[in-house]
Image (cartoon, rainbow, N blue to C red; front, side, top):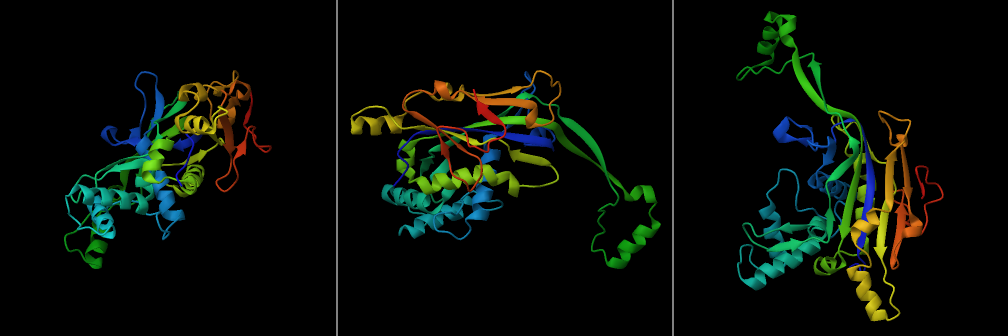
Length: 331
């Protein structure tokens, strides 16, 4: 059964000496708001890391494949979904498109979660995903740096070159010509807030259920642990994953179920209960511990529950901060 409650969630990502999300149109420099100088992490960058984690952690499990994979043709997966649904790969009839759409939701975790445009090529229609993630935005302005680096070797090509020809070329070359220069873009530090939304109504259409939700939480809390590279430096989800669950307030069960699906408070009011602010004595933060973080639990609207998950494989603590939480506190 698909999830029966609307959710919102928020978490914080620490970025130390890294490029959290480069802009390919700007020489891969870290994305920033040109007016406020606050940094961005694009939603597609976050979803890419979630997809990569799901591929790693749930490889081979039914229903946990990923349709958007590196260096692949999406149409191949769409055609496979239609074939598995018992229709021709390229059938255009409405019932064939619907069958392919339904099967794709069953086969692919990211289609079931984030949705997909599958009207290309074989055509399995479009899916609106129940899970939507915003651009991550840094709490304070960030400072992009463009650093020169040196590689003590070259990669000059000799057409159809043999080992002996490359050795001879090295002997003839001057030492200075056998080095290359490069550049690396990074920020010294940034603390990014990322928000997300989960629709119970759209979950009913795709089949996004409690197990999928658990996998999503695991992926969010663990994704940076499996995304290490020279450009990513030290990136980590440093806060608990903070969850807002709409449970309803009405005494009538049918009405309460309706409230749980549609929500009991607007999302912005819930996000405003979470605060992260730079400490007064800190001028240039270089750690998430240079910030105070608190949640106003006493202002939680009726019908909404708040939960905190610290570890990827740990439980959700509802109604209060986990006993071992070291950063966030009660407001």
